[in-house]
Image (cartoon, rainbow, N blue to C red; front, side, top):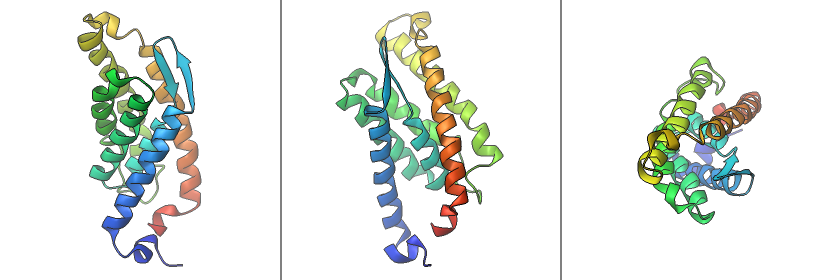
Length: 172
């Protein structure tokens, strides 16, 4: 079986295509598969960001994360969160690595902790400074944000294990 790279003719074309695919999947899982909360929703779209961060070069994964998650916020009516989402989700990618033979590795499992800190801390600081003008009030959604990363982390581990079993990394 030929690799996807060989069939597309270029790794840049493949990376751009996968970036668009991951952005679209992130958007769908964030915008349409969510649990409403008092001030927004909890979703599992971050699982796609985690997988993209483990498969794509950093700049592509960062674009997929920022575009997919921000587009979801914007089209769901949560425009106020778009700047924070773009930065937080792009930075989340930096915690993961695509340089290992398998997606499930110690580094990528450990990366779930910085992802949790970035989500809870980033949204807490953003809402505390720009929305509520009170830092303590900004962290009122911390439990929901933590649950979001934990749920996405569980989905990521299941998806990554399946992708590792399919030997997708060798095909890319």
